[in-house]
Image 1 (spheres, rainbow, N blue to C red):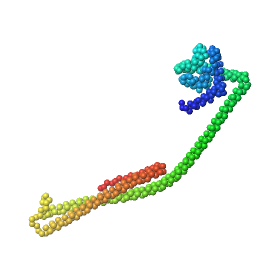
Image 2 (image 1 turned 90 degrees about the vertical axis):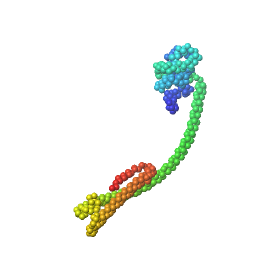
Image 3 (image 1 turned 180 degrees about the vertical axis):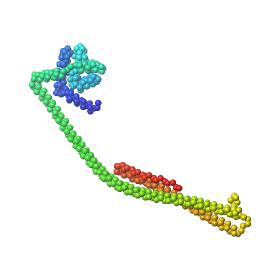
Image 4 (image 1 turned 135 degrees about the horizontal axis):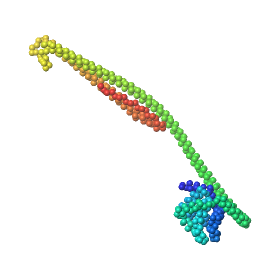
Length: 419
């Protein structure tokens, strides 16, 4: 049990259970308890009472520690615990039960003992008997079975008060007055001492309260200064928060404009890429058509050449050109003209084909360059959002003490493959 609780139990026993009254007024209440115990012995143990009376063994010689210490002076704790439990449940009358039980169990030994032997038995032998828990338990059972009516205790108390009054009346008035004067003088001295103690305690309490009040005032001043500083910091923090919110709004607007600009550029780039793709497709289609037309014209020319007997003789069966050994000047001129025309037409077609291929390559390079520019622009926007803008928002969150929701990042548009 903690010390605080043990002290509270002690105070409760002293005041509410009447144990404090045993120590007051020159132990008057304690002598009343001894008178009641002797009366109970005379009623329940007459032979033992007569033996003690013959030995001039009075109750205060052996039972004082029973009442004043609740059997804790000599008896083992296993027995004392049971007694205190019964005391808390039944009150101070349980001491009479235990005392009568002890006298009954030790009756035979006490009847055979003399004055010295009886005192030694109460001091040494009796506590040793109950070191065993079984003996203590049987003793407590016997104590609980003993009947001690409260009415009889009240009756014995009244008899004791009557006896004390008769003794005081038979006493010499001068002695009684001297004793009463001495008692009043002691009470006066005790009250004066208590008054001095209370006055000293009052002064000490006032000084302690004054010191506590000074400390409280100093602490209040410190707290007021801290409160003013906190309010000032709060105002500065709110102003900084407002500025950061404005900066954030401006940054949002700037990024929104940049995003719109980037989206417009991406749209333009996409339109240009689509246009270039369309142009390349048209050029490819035109090239294929020109190649097909050239092939058809070549087949027609070949058919015409093979239809001509003179021209067919020039070409062998393997397709090799054979010039006749002897040819007229006119035929040579016509053949050269046709060859020159065919070569010129072939060169024009090759030149047009090369230009078409060059345009196609340039269009592909332009598409790749635009796609690279678009990817770089999107990476720059993404990096700016992830670095500077995020750091700015985090600093705003730290200063304002609130957690701003993270803005979703726009998804990157899928890159279109080059043709």
